[in-house]
Image (cartoon, rainbow, N blue to C red; front, side, top):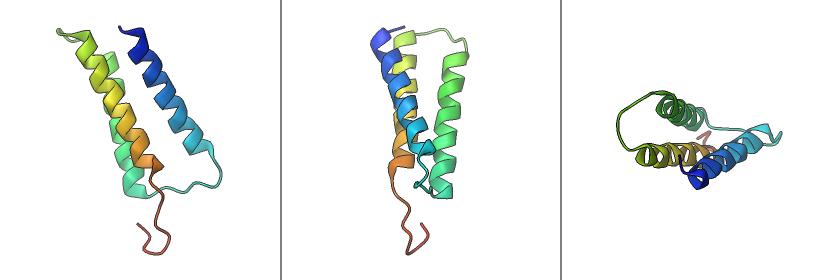
Length: 82
């Protein structure tokens, strides 16, 4: 496994945790659901033994974690509830 990709996945997960732990944040339910789905898929990727290129798998996992963070980083529109 590429240590750079491993480190980036760790850093992205840490950013998500910090975002979730901030008291002033509220999240859109659909965005939260999407984020959880991407994180669950990333865990599946990392824990499923497959034949193939491990580096490609790791890059896909990194992308899923990044998307999960992006889902949460958009602020909820308080006027429309979205």
